[in-house]
Image (tube, rainbow, N blue to C red):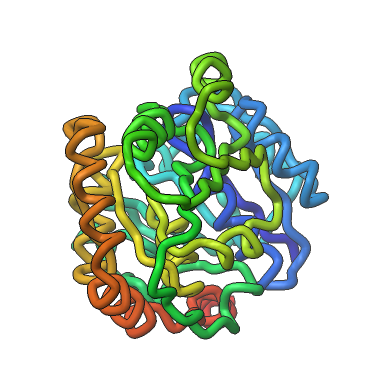
Length: 324
């Protein structure tokens, strides 16, 4: 039995959907093949993880006209789509044979399938079979964690804005941190599609804080465990840090993060809204306030622990096996 994943990733849409499909592919244990868009980031992830893949040219937000060829040659028993913008019209153009269909995060248009799951988003009502933070797909090493103790002092701040950081929030966060007194260090994680290498290179030589820059990190957990505060975007990253027990400041990259992800996290994060609207000065003020409020940081971690019990991948695998 073959499972075919159809998923896209790029600088403009991020790589979170690709990484969650990789994690799910490991969990379900059936032979998996991927059909991805023509972009270096998802290709690199496929090669790192050792999954066979086919490239489907086309827009990052579409399934692509050549996907039918991939279906024909792989003959899957199950097709898992993780493309938020997918439409029923696109699905109708495909000849699926006897393959069952699972739609992860079909967020914008009603589509017919054997199973719908929204993993980190609030689902579209027409596609609402299962959804919410109980279905967040976490890597295995995160599922067994209990939150670490909250430090009374913030000694390390981790900054991570996904695979691409299309809005340049990394630079904004570093500018905000530059003007804060104290002996804390900064851990900076930049992803495979980071778009601001030149500007970052200009900023680092005279940066006043001890800063460690990590690029394309495969095992991020040890770095997260060192952090006492995180400045982030992205629902998957936020979920991982909640499991580790790190208080979060969130700058949303897109309206869908603001409207369909972080309201679920409620009082488990400090959500500043769309980061493009937040100045470095306002971000700095918020960071200073939370650094000085141990009780608030402790409350954020306790709330995050209640929201995320970590069995999303296992729960989805059980649902998938139920339709086969």
